[in-house]
Length: 523
Ligand code: HEM
Image (tube, rainbow, N blue to C red; front, top):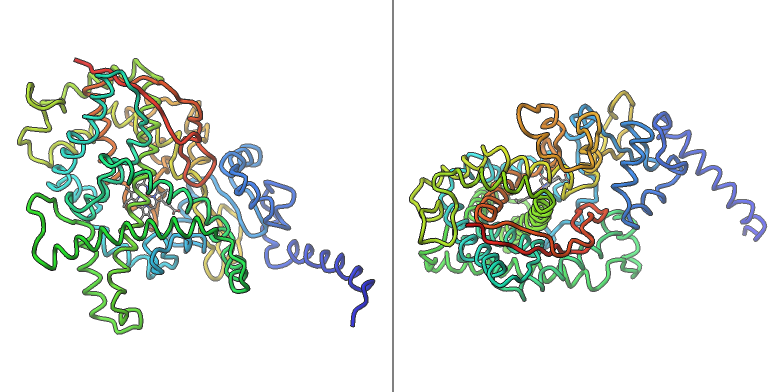
């Protein structure tokens, strides 16, 4: 049996052996990459600590500025900030296990589908209903947009303008993001009604916050979290488990309500179609008929699979869009001349998106073919410049999106990397490259006007490649129409923007969790 002295001698020895292995072993090729921190070749503790202390985005960007476009963050993790690097990483490399934290009902939705084959098949089941042409031609979207804007968003802003009261536009953006997303998934009669149900919105936001805070270890150190769980130590607090249960329960009820109405042939005649739900349900049903694998034999598997993706889209869609809308409004308040020019552009539409309905012709109440408005908005230079510049400066998904070097290794930006190394790029860093975005810390919408190919090439708020954002076109269309409707009719002004700076996390919304504005009606 080893004596206490033996143990004392052995522990420094094993530490030295461990460090030597880290430096000269399998990961040796990474030693040529500049270290963001002196401990990076030996230990992931520094990287975990900047993530835990919510400093990842700024620290990684500061390291890139200091050390160049490829840096080492941990023994087996690197960050890149070049277009070539992005192309290599996001071509066909698998995701890492961090994405497993996004599993719902025990079934992976698209975002948590890690491996290339299943991911491609999964995405194919619904990519068509998120294509730009499908969305622009959708009569369903035209109908529920008019409903959400004229009965939800614009009356709230009109009341605020008439009474001089202020409004939290981050919360408004979240409610709108959730209601439009769920209307597209389930149909306007079967989605959430957060714009008019503040209590339900509060319940959801509290649950979501608990989940975001509580799954840190499960996401970043999944193997350790699972090992500890097996011996009775749970690193996911009960509050986070309850939050996940709350969100799953909400989405399950939305699915069930629609499913029951469909099966009993009692769908509301005034509802828009349940576009995403129906698409996914029928394609999965067909797919399962062809397989006899074990999950397919679970009677609930089909419903859980559909619900898992429905919840994934609700979560992925509402927060990111709400953040982008709030920051666009913030910057429009900070740039009143640009706001006035934008209003002139919006009022040049024929007819414009005038509100309230009734007195003057309005694009809301004309029988303009539904396909026309999204295309018109998509071509307005100032409106698009305002939104894209906001997404550049405040990318809602700001941090590195981890991928794994495939079997056999790969060459990335001139460095030969062994398989299993984690590599990523972060929109926060990519969007701050001064060689492309001069005065990168400033909101300068004019950089988007004219033919700015390089600026567009480096725009990376929605990721890219096979696992780039499936909801990109939906999000842009919904944000453009809200901004157009609001700024045609109102001017906005800051009341309280304390804590507007983004939190330094994967999803980077205002630190204060609010943005308070007041509005004035513009005649
Ligand atoms: C401003 C709005 C949005 C932004 C900035 C945004 C950003 C992103 C980014 C950066 C990714 C890649 C994440 C990664 O690989 O780690 C992503 C993926 C994804 N987004 Fe979005 N998103 C937005 C809106 C939406 C909406 C409305 C939906 C609804 C369908 C959505 C659904 C998804 C899904 C399902 C994925 C995973 C895609 C895959 O694995 O193939 N997003 N999004």
